[in-house]
Length: 133
Image 1 (cartoon, rainbow, N blue to C red):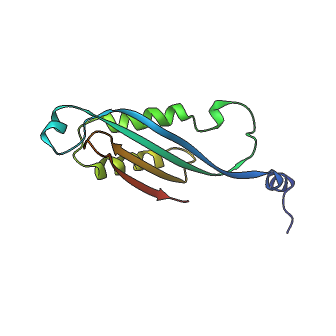
Image 2: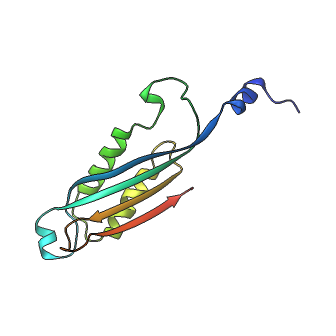
């Protein structure tokens, strides 16, 4: 069996596993079951990692339309977390993880959402990992 030359050339291009990371994204969201949480949005912090799988070490060109634009990822995170009041961190992180997994080229998602001011002496956070890692 003969391997087409174009496939052979593609297989010789150096590649590596690529992960897009947003760390420390802070904004207010309506989240929680306590009365004061239902009345006022509270500060949260989101960290997200998106596994993009094997990618060439150099993109085929320097055009943003050929890669996952982190501005789009940031907007999706903010929009999903602020769209409506959500009672549980577990519900919010599931909804956000599902949405991020729908992005073209995303193989896996790791997300952490933290309530920054729920207690005076600590933050409370939840992590979720889904897809391929």
